[in-house]
Structures are given as C-alpha cells and as structure tokens.
Amino acid sequence: MTQPPPTEQDPDAPWLARVMHIAFFLLLGASLARFLLRHPWEDRSPWIVALSGALASLYLLGPVLGTRAAPRRIAWLGTVVAVWIVLVVLAPSFAWCAVPLFYTGLRTLPPRAALGLVVLLTAFVVFAQVQLAHGGWDPNLIVAPPAVAAIATGVFVYSDRQAARQRALIHDLIRTRRELAAIERREGTLAERQRLSMEIHDTLAQGLSSQQMLLQAADRTWDSDPGTARRHVRTAESIAERNLAEARRFVHDLAPADLAEGGGLEQALRGLAARESAEFHVDGTAVPLPDRTQSALLRIAQGALANIREHAGADSAALTLTYLDDQVVLDIADDGHGFDPALARDPGERGDRGHGLPAMRVRAQQLGGTLTVESAPGEGTVLSAAIPLTPLTP
Image (tube, rainbow, N blue to C red):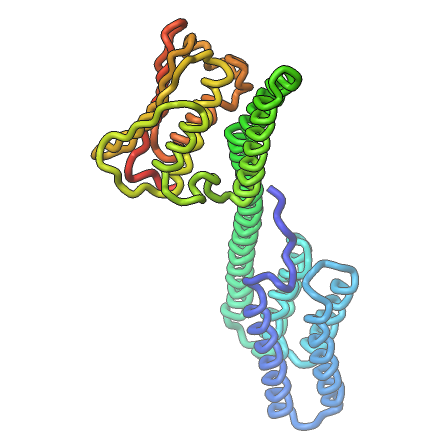
C-alpha cells in the first residue's frame, strides 16, 4: 500500500507544531532571563544576547521551509543546533530548549539521523546540568535528561505512526469511494443501455416491422387494388407517427404514449388489442396501479403481441387483465404454432435477438414480479406476467 508522504498540511501536525514553537520561545526567553538575572552584565553577556536573538530568528524560518528532509531544511536545522550548542557551552541554562529541538529533528530527519540528533542533544543537556550543579553530584542529572528524551521520542514515534495509519486509511477510503463511484457510473450506463434496448425493441423495432409489412403489402396491391394499398400506406404512416411519439417519451423516460393519452392501463391495453386485432378482457375489481407497474405491463403486452404477430402464426390472440387481492396479472394467449419454452432460453430463438422474453422478464422482476410462459409445439402459447400490488422499492 502506497502511503502519501507527510506534509506541513497533515491534519495531525499543525497543533503540535504550534505548541512546540511556543514552548521553544518560552524556554529561550526564560533561559535568557535566568542568565541575565544570575549573571549581571559580563563580558560574555553581549554574545549570549546576540546568539539568543540569532537562534530566535533562525527558528522562525522553520515553518517557511516546511517539514520535508530537503537540503535547505537540513542545513537550517544544523545551523539552529550549532547555535544552540554554543549557547549551552556559554550558558548551560539554555539546555532545556532541546525539547522542542527533539521534535523538530524527529520531523525533519530520517529515523536514524533523528535518533542520532536526539542522543547529541541529550548529551549536551546532561553536560549543561552537570555544569549548573557546580560540581555537586546528583544521579538525576545523569538519568533525568535521557529519560525525558526517551519518553519524548517514544511519544513522537507512536503519534507519527498513528498519523501515518490515519493518512493511509483516509487515502484508502478516498480511493475506495472513487472506485465505487466508477462502478456506480458503469452500472448506471449498463442499466440505461438495457432500458433503451428494451424500449427500442418494444416500440420502435415493432413499429418498424409493422410498417415494413404494411408497405410490402401496399407494394403488392398497388396496381391491382389501389384503395387497399393506400389504406396500408395510411396505416403505416399512423404507426410511424406513434413510434415518433414513443421515441420522444422513452428518451425522456416518460410513460408510453398510450398511457400518456389518459384513460389508464385498461384503456391503453384496449387500444393496443384493437390495433393488433386481439380480444381484451378485465377480471376483478380495478385498483389504482403505480405508473411504473402500468408502464411495465403495457410494454410486456406490446412485446408479447409483437412476438405473436411476427412468429406465432396465430389466428387469434387475447389479453386478460386480472386484479387479485395481492397482485395484478396480465395474460396474453394465442392459438399459434407454439414453441418449446426451454429452447427459448437461447437468445436467438424465434428471431427475437434476445430482447423479447428476456426484456419482459426483466420488466417484471424489476417490480418484484414474475413472468411465466406455457407453450408446446402446435398448442399455442400463454404468457403470464404477475406484479405485486406493493412493488419492490428500486
């Protein structure tokens, strides 16, 4: 797993950096005040004041240079440490300014170099404490500075690792969110393609097929029976007009044209049956149906009647809309030559190019319903679509 490098803008760093900067200047000011109070103006005092000012000015450049281990940043840190060492040699009271320098070194240098710097700073703190003791012996002078350095280093390393884990987690979450968004876009594209393929099959393809048959019939009778030929052409024109309306509606994902004209599902099915020379019946007490259910049942009826017209060779067909207590059922029956439903699982079976029965089944399943087909060679076909009255939430 690739982790993003730490930067000055890390969410866990700024507050601690500010605390350490404030602590450094407080310790530097306190050390200078202690020196001037304990040692009234001496020959070394101008050097102490000048070096304190130089150290403060140098330390102010730190945030400008950032936290990366770039050559300029390392040179700056080396200069700060060198000035601090000179101050400690001249005035041991400046030793405790090392604590903020621990933090700066650990954030700036590679791990081994940072630990080496901590050891060096600790050694000078011990040296300073011994000098301040004026020859007196106290074990704390030797033990306390290394203990404080070890604790500070351990806390920093632990916090830095936790911050690295947090950055890695955030990085993974962002990457996962982007991958999920890409998957959702792909799924949305596939769903839209499926919708368009079903709409085209159930409307435009069927209409174009009907127009082709009508125009072929008109061409055959144009010389022998001009009146019949003209009726075929006018019917083809009407189908083309209806197809144009359907195309405009499904591009905008609107209801089918028959439903948009008003009258609800029953009126739309009745008109469809009349155009296809099929019978239409209603059983049970009608109840209001959601728009999606009405649209799906009408599309299923259109697809089934198109299959009957193009493939079944039927003399008659019938549509029956039945309202039950918990579902609405649409049955489409014909007396054609029938087929083997098992063979229809082949996408190319009966010439529907995989969009007929599969499209109807998808429409029913999207609403929590089922599509069943009963047929046998020479015995006609009954297609039944059952949709619950409380369809699944998409």
